[in-house]
Length: 372
Image 1: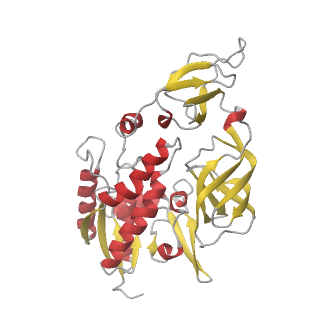
Image 2 (image 1 turned 60 degrees about the vertical axis):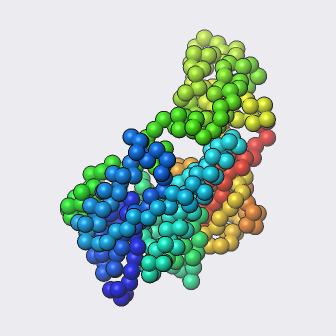
């Protein structure tokens, strides 16, 4: 490897990207840091930490001894990520903006910018790995099972993976923190970020209120009885238990000592009638899906895998669920699970795995049941 090979690292202000930059410099690369600013609305609020993140990223660059550039992608973010985020919520679905951000900003706008700077590769602090086999690039799970982020990266394609390094993908998080402390990084003990910048730690419903109009409607249980009123279907997601305002309501016909004290869960959002359907009990049949369909598919290899047995995640941090996949070309696929999956949510991503290899995935359109 030429010691002159230039790698541009996305420095977020967090410890993972900081250690990534350090490791690359140790390996002999010419490392340049870029801090991406993706959100400008209410950037001075208590919830959006981008100013502090920039200061942390700049401090890290200083300690490691690399240059850092502040780049504003807020316009691209609003057009490509946030607009889609709002469209999906208004349609009653629950999108995953982190996946869209990776596909449209971190591995498109950022990658393009890095190439203009003469980079041969980019790097981020994601817990994932890239492997080249038989002339193709594979996306692999990070070795730390508690931190694996391949789920969020499943839309990356061959061209993007060929230019990408994930330096901490081989490490457990505990080792990343140890390295950060050992070399005196100022953010060695910084808490992991838990939200998207434009939402951060703020109350989610309050945030959506600013962009989506409320249209209250009935909350109904399976018998058709109305047991409450929702504030707008966009503000709820399948499987949601908190914030329904119906905690004391008993199921119709509930017997003493029976299921009347079991919590209520959101089971369906019926857009046409503006009705929120809820059920009682975590294992209620309406919450369990033996199959799902997905569209807007992206396959890492550029083509669908063969039909057959795989593992799949329908949400982040979930163990791979055994299933069979029936691809429909590049248009979509159907998954049939060995065990029914809980709260399969339209708008979220179903991501397919063959062992440690992430094959790609798609956006869930339906849980493919006929219960309605």
